[in-house]
Length: 290
Ligand code: A3P
Image (cartoon, rainbow, N blue to C red; front, top):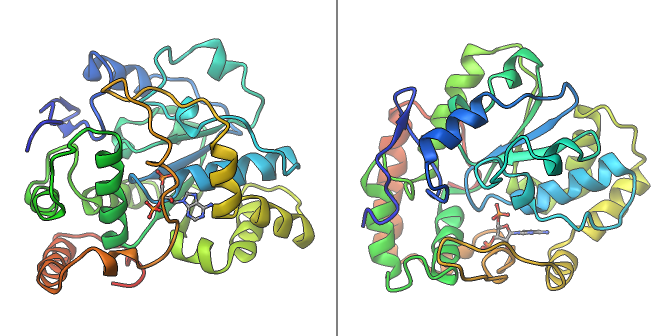
């Protein structure tokens, strides 16, 4: 079950996310030292909360065009970029839309100094777990796992890279509490799905871009699940740790509440107990639909 566990720490915290780098500790230290630009926009999210979707929306908003960015969010995900100070990142037109699933403490120190705008994306914990399960199956990382076995592993341990969203949220809240003046916007997947134009208008205001309601409607439409899935078909996919490429891992169903099709009543009850126990351990955010 600990297939993905590197057991590696930086600043006394386990490195979260796939150990895709040959030397994750060195890579995380390089990330921490990475120079930031004042106008960077940073998405902090747990896996499967809709980061591709939000990245594309932000590309469109900041470029003022509903043309697809033609960029996979992986190319701006710090734990996946091989050569961090590479021209690829440095030459990207400002503002850069960066993202990571790493804990805040492992992100560039200059995020704080330069007050880089952070967008914190969240999603219902059960839907996230279901999406994550299908993702790793699709990528053939743990393709022999049943959902039940996956859930047990997911809930089991605080310190394995495939562990749950609430650790990520807790770490984010540590950052928020210790940096009360930092510009942070919280977004729930469910709000983006139910009221995309409202959220996109709020996003535009947060990143200080003047965007009309009509343009935000166009962005919402261009970034609908169906349109993004279609656009994704023509993109080149990066390789995963098994060298396999899977497009289905990123655009699966794109709905709220798919967990009801996957969890049994018993699994749902034990997950609820798990969430409640985790909340008592200081997770301050309320996820929608719990
Ligand atoms: P599902 O597996 O539940 O379908 P991430 O980009 O962080 O990996 O998140 C992937 C999840 O977001 C997948 O969820 C995917 O289908 C969903 N998603 C991607 N684009 C979307 C969109 N435009 N609208 C709604 N959901 C989207």
